[in-house]
Length: 505
Image 1 (tube, helix red, strand yellow):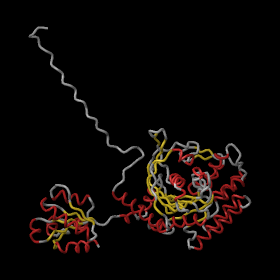
Image 2 (cartoon, rainbow, N blue to C red):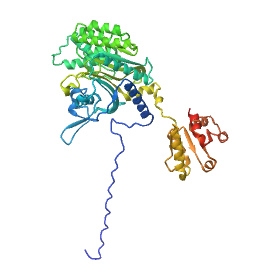
Image 3 (cartoon, rainbow, N blue to C red):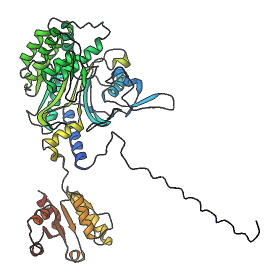
Image 4 (tube, rainbow, N blue to C red):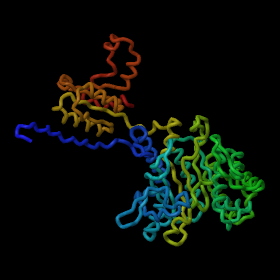
């Protein structure tokens, strides 16, 4: 190439595209803010007050547990470490996010057993995580609030939990008749299985037992025909999906059908009906005696069957229950996923689990408790029009027209707070129009404005946004708008607190 030859143009280095992560919530999880979060916090505070009134003390356990501490007590016994979010620590041990609040309690009791008061009465709320397929309204992280008594063998502890659950519903504003705590006993279920001749030594006993109990648990949703189908060959639902049944014969199905058909309207007659079916079995007799003791306490303390019912169709899903089981059901009607009216259904439940701590200690330590699902209960309160109970106090926003006056205005806001008012100063740098839009977006009730003329006169302008919205809906033309005060007035600074309190009261 000669000296005068043209050199090829140099290519510019290709600019590397800067990675920007996509802002998105992981599948099965969600953010929560505003009124929904306020309602949740209100519920936690209300339920906690009831628990504390009963003498339960707060406990907070770690989010992670060693996977072997959760063990077989996950819902699916055949997959003990599935259904959880797990990771391997740097020391080679597997840890899982807690699946519920009960297994961590069992570990806590076993770890600190010698130093704990006995019985231990603890309550706890917090998120739990389940590595399951998410769906509409079904999240992988949700909130529970539990209360448990550990170390009490008598049925008074079970009865107290049930009464406390009823008190929680009423403390939240759910009226009598819109909720029901339904109670049964796993020992009675075992007596029923013995009565129908199910062989506990058979290879398929556990799977058939679970199928029978699940069928009974669906009585309120599927009715007697649906239950009997699931007890027999199986049932095809409206979508065409087939669920294999327990394979019971006609005589066996009739016994189970008699049990789930017993009315829960009267505790005495319910116990008599259950006794007719299982009183000849040892486990059935024990279960009946335990329920009778609980029912006597309910009656003595004034909790009637319209609040606490003996209901033989209550089963509860987890395999570790060993005695009384209970379900908190909301009985008012709401639209289901298909748009049809049905009972709102369960918002919590629990029972006695005497074997859970035994895994750690090697000895039986009795326990009983209840767990309330906060998200589902929040949805119920919203449907009942009870969500407004969580609304915070009215907000006052103090605007800033001149940044040099901010320190004085911050002192004004401090005076409002000292008087028990909820107040904030605008912390941005925008013009007045944007500040008013901000106050409106924040849901503020009142806006305080202090311009140069107002400051000289020792007054402020107080703007009532709620009243302004009402007036603007009534005003028909601009002349009328200009002639109106549009829900604002000037007040002396010294009278500001009294005027605000007068407006919001």
